[in-house]
Length: 439
Image (cartoon, rainbow, N blue to C red; front, top):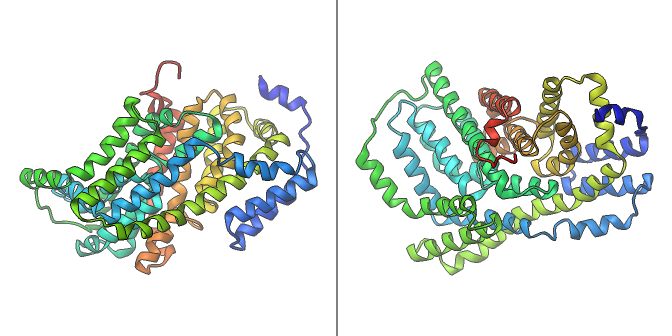
């Protein structure tokens, strides 16, 4: 087997490797921006190892982001911003509330469903957390939910932003590993919905235990039809995006462009968007995009340096020297991804860890597509786990609640998401059922 061949190779990593890695960790711990920490670490590693020419750093900065697929990232971010400014996101929540509001835990369930609707358009978790949080938190508190728990519910529901297609995270991992984003979107559909359902079920169980939301208003078909009619334009956007991608009419990048144009035209036609709003929207979206792209650009030379140093091969040797049991190796991979998701954002984790872990996954017989879905879903758990927990900080910023209080209330949702991760890891059919036979 391949690992026996690798064990015969000498993959010697000294302080010329560990030193820059520790430097990156220290810089991030000191609150240095992630992109700057990665760039400094890559530069130091190139200098001390000499494994690749230093000119690689400059070349990779431009070559890495000069890719057609990456155009979708700012476009989906802009779509989410337009969705909020035009009030279409509120229409989506109204449809969700009319659909599940008649249940005993209707408002909590509809909030999670609303996060899922928003995920089908924006591809971003933080945007969903902020948008849904502003609209739903006060209503949840009025229904009897403690504010920290309400924040944890919204933060967990917003994790679907990178799990339900279209997702920026799947675009990035597809770019890094050379896999079609459309194929990944197809594979991620069921896992993303399973995560959303797990959060809904967990909220129902928590309600049964604590009685947060006891009243039941009953389902009204008339109310549901009215909400769907009033929200028809908002519902049209995810239908266009997902329908276009899955039918093969659009690439994800083209779908993002169509989504932006559609939401802008709807806003202008309804009078909820004016030309005066455009500068604010563009600046807001540019700020978010300005956080993501530098991380991608500066992660690529670091990833190339790690590959040149044979770090993936060394990692396989290290792991398989401990155990060759595929089930245990999968658990180890999940543990690494959860730990990484707790301390670092998704984008650098994808760019750095995907090329290192993919060979190990392939060695134990895991499909490339299954690996990508497993990685993104596992990293998604990191959005509601400290110390980073981006969604926790978004909700804490909106409400003034303690991050730790919200994180404590989010523990049941972490467990629920982890169970879905295990399903994806050990049942390949969950992520490959819709794929062609070649997968």
